[in-house]
Image (cartoon, rainbow, N blue to C red; front, side, top):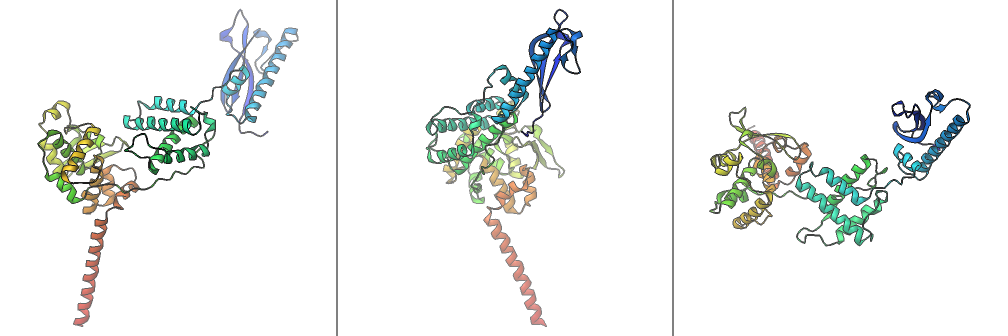
Length: 419
């Protein structure tokens, strides 16, 4: 039988574990350069051991019995190795040892894998991301219970059929939160998280094949929501006697003119403010999401908001650049602001970042390469998503082109008449 694995058995002794002058004998199993040892509970006189051959030397009955035992062990270990191959199980030195010793190797399950991932990543990923993994696990538990009528499955049971079945289940099932229906992109996000969890199992050698090999995710590209110039002006023009709404409005407008995501605006301190090469103030920070450095020259309206809160008690006490709320509270306040300003779009803080990319920069002729740099994108392809939705910019550019062509034609006509 041909195999890609390299397998070997070697018998060794340990001088550091000698007992009454006798050396314990071990079987060393090697699979693909990984080694593991098994104590054979046998002792041998060091004078009767051949290190080069890995066997006892001499003609006594005791020596012959030991060598016979060692050959039986070698034969049984080889059988264990061949058995793992025939059953198409993952072949490791530890797996051979466990089979030889009669230890049934516990196979990992899907739910235990989710638990392992969530435990390992809870101090690595942000809470908002971890919360999504908990939700994904809940949906898979429901799929197992309602469709497969079980509480868990082994990782070896994961397949293309399992993934497609889950996709169908999610599209037909009522969502956990009525206000958040599971559309195509939401379903794909859940499957995408499963894929990341499964990749962790593959890296840990708990799974020897990728069940996603034949699966192609299909996301629906949605236009990014952003405020028009009139909508942004309506928010800017209105002031509020309710302090929380005024703070929320100022933070939102600040992001509209800097392009900072919530967490990056939240983390700003006076240390992030410095003089740039143009003599004006710049924000220097690092994007939390991608760890990309960002340097943003401050536009006048953003600078006005910083100046406004420079002596605010909360800002001074917390060492912040702006008075900040939690993202959840901020989005709730922005919905109130949208209602008061007659804006029907679902206003969230992240729309400010989209507004900076579209209405404030690209629409006003800032090159897409510059916008990409200001947003801290790792690829300009990400920025191009914004450029595709600006019909006004397209209209303006085409109008300028028409004017240019008409002017050229007028000059040609004028020259013809003169001649």
